[in-house]
Amino acid sequence: MKLKIFVLVAALIAGFGARYMMESPTQAQPVGNIGLLQSGNETIDIFDTTDDRIRILYFGYTHCPDVCPTSLAIMTAALKSVPEDALSEVRPVFISLDPKRDTGEKVKEYAGYFHPSIEGGSTSEENTAALAKKYGVLYQITELENSAMEYAVDHSSYFYFVKPNGELLEKVPHTLNPNMVSEPIIRLTAQTQTQ
Image 1 (cartoon, helix red, strand yellow):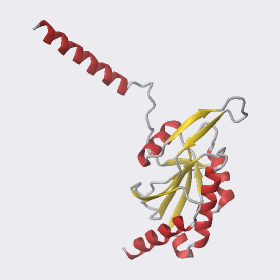
Image 2 (cartoon, rainbow, N blue to C red):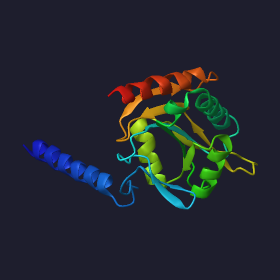
Image 3 (spheres, rainbow, N blue to C red):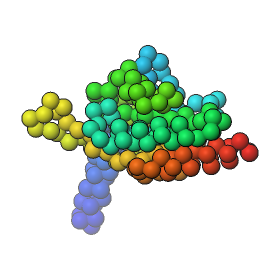
Image 4 (tube, rainbow, N blue to C red):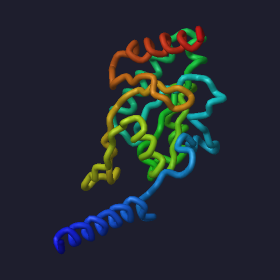
């Protein structure tokens, strides 16, 4: 009997401890609408349902040495290759995974180097993590010894095609072929135009 009581008390303590850890204020939580990004001096809402364009989200960071510039160049080539009516139906957004270094101004400027239609945005670390989790974006900080960059952000590389409400339509893995990005643009925008 004493063993049963001991096990019950231990389970209750463990349960309360786990609850405290989950609700602890020291654990960062997303703040408000995770779709709100700082872009230049403006706040943009990537989940604004009054804007019916399909989002093309790409997650990266401005200090990225190779993957991000390559992917944004591929996105640019795809955007330049699609008909004007399809281009007007998409909203490409580059979202920083490095909010410590990437201000809204910096990300907007960086994205603008590639194509005028690509918006760039940054948000808090908590909301960045929540957005990444929503779409299965994997990333981690890797310290760089004896480097002026101090750290890199290792991350997965996908183009996420998303409805205005945030629902994922499909994702395209990192590619060097712009047709892999332009094909879903044309197909998905054609579907929305016929609905």
